[in-house]
Length: 172
Image (cartoon, rainbow, N blue to C red; front, top):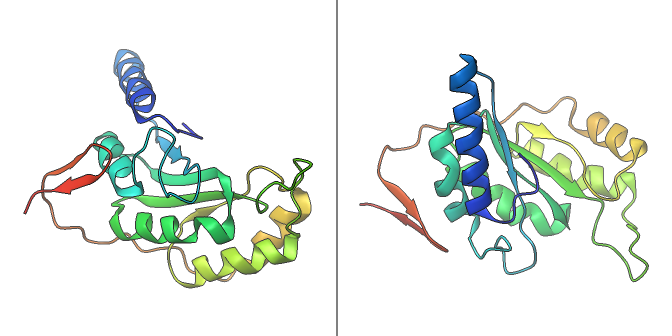
């Protein structure tokens, strides 16, 4: 599931996926990718990154991530937050910068690759790609830039009750 901006819809989709997989007797990995819509650092429905994660972590996804809406430079703090809290793999598919006044994306493949290489070298991500404005040269530059980086290690997260509304609430 990708480009999630409304967590209630995402939870409905997760419920439907679970129902279908149970009916079929299948178990397939689920990837979830949300969208931070602007500099407020929230989804369109108002949740912070951590609140969004708390809302969908029960699905035990193969990966949780962020895509679309923002470029790599703007997404970095939210990727870092997700990396800190996610018990599963972290995926990121940023835009090639922010759209200009003509709706085009000006960030070059080299600029984007340099930004996301830092994420990989910092151990924040497991899966990486591109969203709006990325082209085959962008994806090649990203692959070349991070090819020698080690994927993020899954952290040991202390078990506790984690709830969410617009903000996260972790029980003490």
